[in-house]
Length: 98
Length: 231
Image (cartoon, rainbow over all chains, first blue to last red; front, side, top):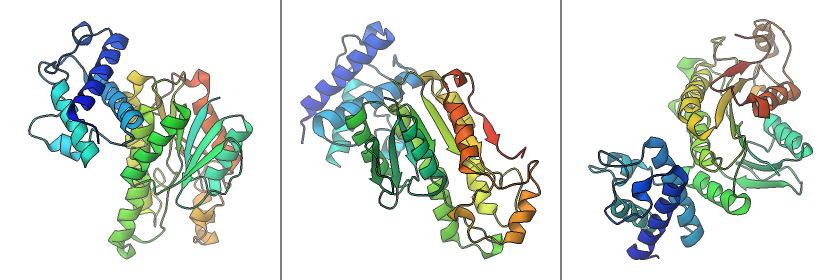
C-alpha cells in the first residue's frame, strides 16, 4: 500500500505533465495547495478529465490498482476532492485503500 | 497496428465485426460473458459482464498496460426481450437497461480515456430500428436504445474536445439469437415497414461501421444511421 507522500508525488508529476501539455503556467511547478478545479482552479472540465485519466493510469502503472476517481463518493462529497493537489492525492489514497 | 475494442464478440454481429477487423489487420480486443469463440494471434478476449463497473475498469487498465492506446470502440453487446409491456417483469427491465445503457456508458467512459493518444479516435454505439418504428412488444428494448442514442448525441459533444467522434448504427433485424424467439409473421410485418424490406446482414452493419471509422469521417459525429431505409 503506498503512503500519502508517494501518492502526492504521483499527483504532482501528473499535474506537471498536464501543465506542460496544455501550457498551464501556474501548474508547471505545483505545490500541495495548488488549486486545480473549482472557483480558484486553473483546469476547465476537459482539463480535469485529462488529469483524472492520467492519474488513474499512473496509479495503475505504479501501484497496480484500478481506481475510478469520478465515482459516487466524489460526486456527493460536500467539498469536491478535485480542488487541490492535496485533496486529489487524498482521494486517490482513499480509493486505493478501499 | 490500430486497436479496436468490440463488446459482445462471442457470437452474432459482434463476432462478424471482430473477424472483419482482424482480417483488416487491426488488433481486436473483445469481450463477452462467456469464453472466447475466436482464435487469432491479434485477438485478445476478456470474460466479463459489460455492466460490471469494476470489471470494465480492470479491463481498461489491462488494455492500457498491454496496448497503450485504443483507436476505436464498438459497443455492440446488447440484450433484448420481446414482450408486451404488461407482461414484462421489472427484473427484465433492469437487466436490459443495465446491459444496453449502463454497459455502453461504462465502455465509453473508460475507453475514451485510452483514446486520447489515438490519431483517429472513434466510438460507434448500437441502436435499433425498433426505436424509430415504435415496435409493439419492444417497449423496454426500444427505450434502452433510445437512451443509447441520447448518450451518443451528448457524448459526441462532450468528447469532441478529445477529437473522438461518437456515432450509432441502427441495424434492421439480422438473423441472430437476438430475434430467435420472434414469430415469422411478426418479422415479416416488421420488414414491411422498411424502405428495403429484407433482413439485414452482418456485412450491412460492417459497412456502416466502416464508414464511421474511416479517416475521412472525422467531421461526422452525433449521428444515428438506420439501415434498411428506416427514418
